[in-house]
Image (cartoon, rainbow, N blue to C red; front, side, top):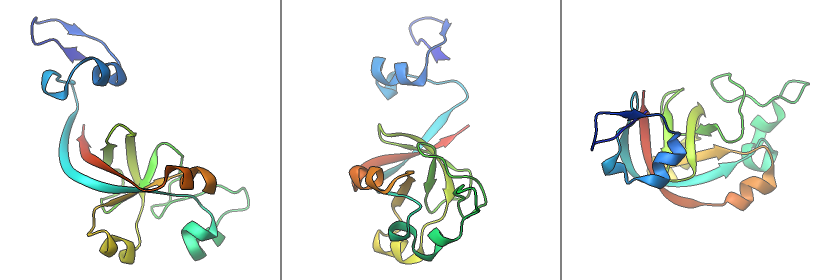
Length: 141
């Protein structure tokens, strides 16, 4: 729900509409707050051996890919980050993701613990995403 500050009316809108129609200072989205964590490095990975090393070889026969917490990884939703499982992160204008995997300690150290790795199903899609810089918010519901 969007709360219009000029009236007392609530107008149902999608989050995407809110982003395009108003600045974040003019919008209150019911049941959702975001806390800015600053600018982070955003990378991408897939389940291949290049991206995941030995962990790429640990997979059930049906090919399902699971993160470190035992949940299936889904492109466009799952990420690895230095937050507890289930933490929701809004990554710039890329989208909202859920922490379902962990990041290797050496990678965290390399990026001063400010890295989020987005899950992709294919290596080429992960490479196309590349390395980007975005402001990250923790979404609190």
